[in-house]
Length: 449
Image (cartoon, rainbow, N blue to C red; front, side, top):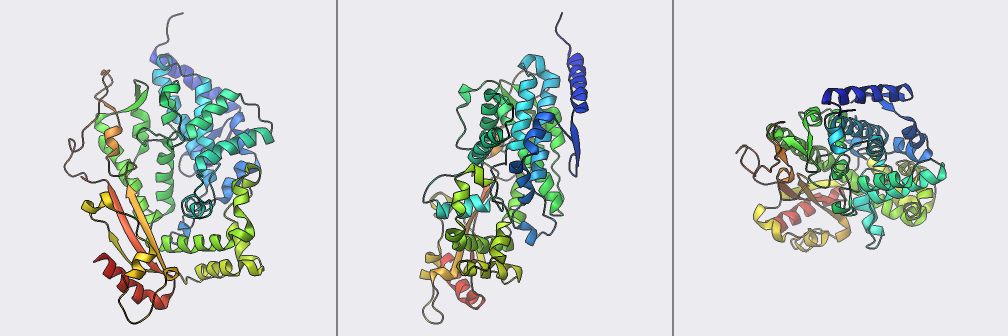
């Protein structure tokens, strides 16, 4: 039998997909419409460990500033699962025979999309980036690695029939964009590892989903259209490449993500609430023994956003300081934003994080005496995923579908209206007590002068 034409491959893919859906369940998602869940995926979804994601808000405490931002890691994970499937199906339709994409590959990528956040902690990245570094005494922890441990635990706990090779690849795909990723040279079909968590250039279906989902939940417009990239991408030399004419669409992906960081994720009042909650967790840590959950996958699924209610309602004296902080958040008696400044470009190379000690030491003599524990400083970095580098320089493009050549597009060769710098560093200072706002503001002004 001769090789199938592209039309035949497309038809076979459609027939296979249609047959799969006869044995699938579906849910209706407010971003992607109907999402079909195959039998293997349902074995993971219908576990207490995965259902826990319903009790993790995708944006942590952002809903206290943007009331609509109450969507969960559960629906985001379903969205990434669906987009991962869409991406690999489209590659298979156009290049399946050429690339040797089979059913094993498709299921593996989809499963990685579904489970990529199963190791996430409470309150979005606050738990991992703000709380754990303060209590782990230098030990490294990441939700990607925890996802791998949770997947192993789910398989063992629920006797899920899945071969070890697929399990290994799923875990590798989840950590592909982190420092724990294995060397690309040891992988076959490297392009598959760029679909869920892209360590090469940051273009992945995880971002496609959360950018649209978060923008919608916060009532913000979203001009980024991921469908164009999904439909037009092409694998060349074992990596996913894009049409040169889609350069600005990809730039919009990174720019929209940066805008969300500035206006939503690091909103000044959101950060004030987060700072208070981190302090509440730190004060409650010894009594609640939070770290014991983090170290044991069998216990980790019990740790979710409900910890705030545990602190708030427990009558124990040991939790009084934490309880008082939560009550302050409820009553909008927040840490007071005093001021901020953006680090000049020429000082970024040698910039070190500013500390409360720096602010206190800059206080003018006389008047109120500030203490370090009265002041909170946050050092915020917002970029396009590659620090001060342009992430588009790591993306490979092709001219048209008749071309077999891939190439990079140099910075500034498309439009002079695009930014020439790709990172902001913002220092913000807060006062924990309303009566000290003026003193903290004056000290910060003197320090930043």
